[in-house]
Image (cartoon, rainbow, N blue to C red; front, side, top):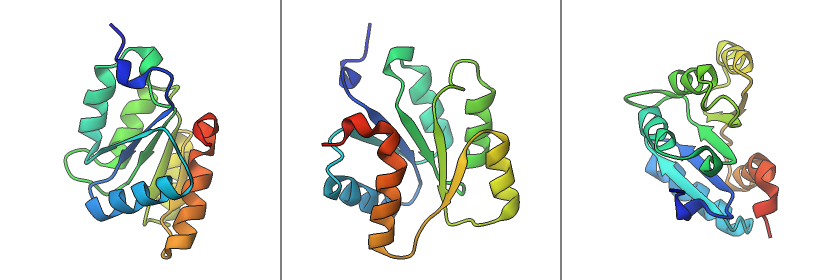
Amino acid sequence: MMNTNYTNKQTILWVDDDPDDIYLIRQVLNEIKFNSEMIPFQNGKEVIDHLSALPKEAYPCLIILDINMPVMDGKQTLSTLKKSNQFSSIPVIMFSTSNNTADKLFCQHFGAELVTKPSTYNDLKGIVANLVKGCSSALK
């Protein structure tokens, strides 16, 4: 049975354990008129469990991961997703305070871009608009 919450929607799964960051992201998505669903998760295990319960046609258009999280961090989650035949086709972007070369190389190895979190709200707005453009059919 298909999960009707996803019917005809482009959905983004945003994985970040900082509630302030999630709040800011919601504000930005509202401002840029992103009219689809953003579902937040606090760690990688939660998002893997969520995806495992979905039929393939209900997969999100994008997963955005923070690196530093409890339980299952962003690197572990990225590795798990991209090594899985079931989830490897879902686009993933790492969105973190890290600007570390080793982190960038790790992400590149798994086909994900590492985007550094900006320090200003206006910069955040521009970056988030760019991140979700892959789900552009959901933009008004």
